[in-house]
Image 1 (cartoon, rainbow, N blue to C red):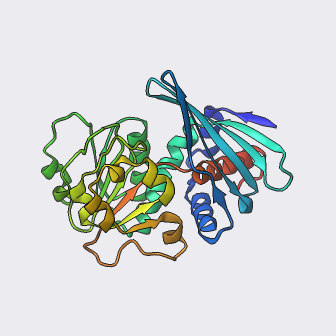
Image 2 (image 1 turned 135 degrees about the horizontal axis):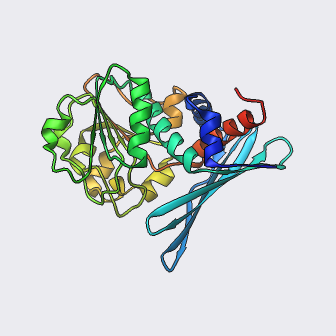
Length: 288
């Protein structure tokens, strides 16, 4: 069994895209050839332990991500096992994996929703804001990309004018902008909140969304304040589809060019384990 640090992960992945292994894993989830565990959180005296995981037989691995949250700071670790023998294969520091997989899943969702990618606006200049800027810039090299800090006092209507991809990657507890400011046809990737008491997106945007793509219906409806805090009437009108089904061609997120699509991310185990499996194969000379 080996241990891989965040530096090892960055070195092994380099400029490699993790989209192919993520796409395969989500398609397997749709067909029942993979499975994932819902997140479990345990806390006492301000110290939180969270776990989530997945079984991904086609990629030869299963595992769990375990992480601590103390004072708003996260530290991630993945335990990876063989899907053939069951033996432990590796432990991986997973801060880098978490950063990469989150941005890559947002990109997968945007592409699945046929995002045009001419003007991209990213809210948040932290770790995830930077990761999303890197991923979306690589995928849409001709796009105008604007990053916005949460507390900059920006004129939202002006900054969102013409934006066809919007990413919210902040720790805001309240909506960042009015949903009326979002242009028809836009794809909004909301990744900042995975708690039921915080939200980045308002009811107005939810009401305008033709579809809401989620990684896991069960986990999202339990964790995502963007949906949990919406009015009952708004929630009842939502058309929620799972990303796995969209990628497998079993569901559609967009039926017309002017449809607004919301991707509400909370982070799921299958994404972590799929990327960890790729990193392990690269480390052992069996990379894709």
